[in-house]
Structure formats: structure tokens, C-alpha cells
Image 1 (cartoon, one colour):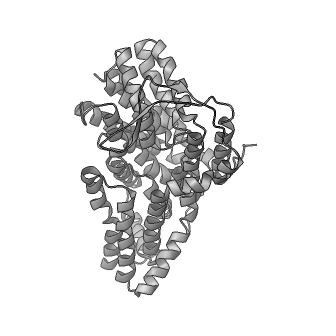
Image 2 (tube, rainbow, N blue to C red):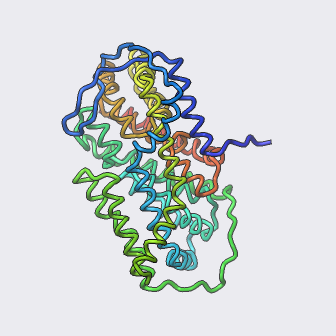
Image 3 (cartoon, one colour):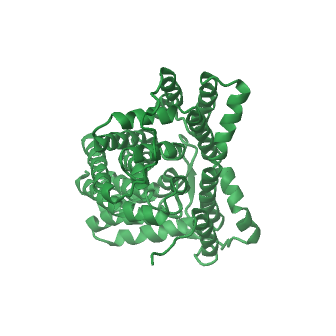
Length: 439
């Protein structure tokens, strides 16, 4: 009998509880920190780790960890609600069903469509670290995947899976490669040929893995009208309005340091425009927009609970201890072995620190000087971070956005990781090769 894993809510709450218990067992310790003038972030100073007075998390801080995590993740949660509300409003007009039906009805090469969709999501991942935004798209992706003859796992593989791979290896991703390079004191695109080659090969391998597994992903096609309604010009216009915010947002991320708040503002406007263009009154558009947000409340809650894990570990002053304990042994290993083992170290750290940008700020000021001591290029340390932390987003149960996507698609975490772990290991070979080839 196959083991049944608990509900994602239970998984996340269990992780928060485990973090609380760890603060009573793991010795407290901290690095000294300095403020980075460009980002305003507090950055660990390598070589300054020291034990500090224990700070085990008590009953009241433990009870408030999740609410505080929700507050800390307010910008991400708002984005999930606004993006989800806009797409739900679009779906309520019937435009998505007609457009997807037309695409499915006309294609004779479903595997090519799968590859193109995967490439599109991987590109968005490489440009702006797309992940939470996908939650709202899951219902549409499920319809598309079923229409192509594939199942829900394939729908997730060609969306969130491809986006995570693109995010991990994208040299233009400001939230992973950008921050990691900054705190490794490297300029962007120091080895463009290597960096873009790794990205291309990683995406190609993930798409190949997805295509290889389509036969084992059970599709459950729903009964459909033999003559589905044809999409109208207004349907195309409505879709364009919903997709339009991504264009200025990508430009804003790359040039103006935009974040989730700017994306939320754009989708707030787009949501109302969809309602008005579809023929609803302002009050009707507002009601549909709010109704669409209701479906995203659980997804937003998962993001907040996941942030609560970091809140607990920070309160207990054990996060630096965990990083120090994992990173220090690397200094006593042969150079090449240490370089390759940076990948699983980053993967392990990503479980308690599910934010890729937060992990870059925490670990790269430590890993980059360690690479110097080992005689390794700092580029190798960055690629190790991208491979370990970036790809871990595919499977870690502390990734609230991933669990929200799985819940929306009605795919259990166990079923997903049985598909994703071998694929992640396959793609990680690209990172390992990049570490060896870096200079």
C-alpha cells in the first residue's frame, strides 16, 4: 500500500513546529553583519561566526510565528491574490476556455505545444524568477494539458517545473543570479557563453524529461462539445490585457529594481479592465475580481506559513549555526570535491531558507571567500548556489508557492516529487559541469 502523505497545510505547519523544536536543541550562534549600501540588506561577514546566548522559541512566539510570517510575506501574498483575481475574472468570461479550445483543436503536434509552453515559462523564470504568479494559471494549464492528451503532472512540469529550471540557471534573473553575483562581488555575465549554454542545456534536458514522462501521466479528458465556440476578437483582447502587465514588470525588474508590489499594482488595474471590457459594470467587475481572489486565499496562506519557518529560525538565532555547520567542513576537503559538495550544502540550506534571494544574501558572503581559500573561482560558488538552491525549489516541502500550485492542481506532493526528483538530478548535472568548467 502506498504511503499517503499529509495535506500541504499539515506539512507546512509541521515544518514550523520542527523549526521551533530545533531552537531548543541546536546551539545558537551568529555572524557579525554589515549593511550593504546598495540593497539595504544585512550581510554576514565571513569568519565572524560565534556562539551566542541560547534563544529557544517559547509558546507565545511559536503561536505568533505564522501570523508574523504572513505579515513578512504580505507583498507576495498580495501578488498571488491580485494575479489570481485577474485570471479568475478572465476565466469567468469564457474567453480562456474558447482560446484554449481553439489552440487544442487546431494543433496536430501536442508535444511541440508542450515544448513551446515549457520554453515560455522557462524564459519568464530566467527573466524574473516566475513562480508565485503561476498559481493563478493552473486551471488553464490543466485544461490545456488535458486537451493535448496529457495529465496534471505534465501541466505542472511545463509551467512551474520549467520556470524553476529557467530561474535557477538564468544569468539575467535578478533574484537569484543577480543577488548571488552581487554578494560574491562578481559583475554580471562574467562568462556569458558558459552561463547561457548552461541555461539552454538545462531547459532542453527538463523539456526532454517532461516529454519522456508524458506516457505515465494519466490524462482524464472531460467531455467536451464537439463544436466548441470559436474565440472572438474580444477574447484575444481580454487575454492581452491580462498578460500585458508582465511586459512592463520584466522591464521594471531588470532596470528599475521592481518587486512584487509593482506587479500587484499592474494586475489590480488589469483585473478591472478585464471586467469593464467584458461588458460588466464597475460594481460587477469588482465583485468578480474579489470572487476570483477568494480562490487564491489558501495559496497565499501557504506562502505566509512557509515564511513563518524563517521567522522561527531567526528568533531562535540558529540559522547562522546551520549555515556555519554545513559550510565549514568544505574547507577541509580537496578543492574539486569541495566545489561539487557546495551543491548539496546549498540544497540542504534551502529547506529552512526557502527564499532564494534570502539564501543568496545569507550564504554567498560566506561561500565566495571559501572558494578563494580553496583556490576555486567565485563563479563556481555562484553556479553551485544556483544549482543547489535554485533546483531545490522543485521539491522542497517548505516552498509555499509550490505546495499552493500542487493543491490547486490536485496533485499530491509525493506524486510530484516522484516525477521531479529524477528530473532535478538530471538537470543538476548541468550545474556540476558548469562548476568544473568555470574559471
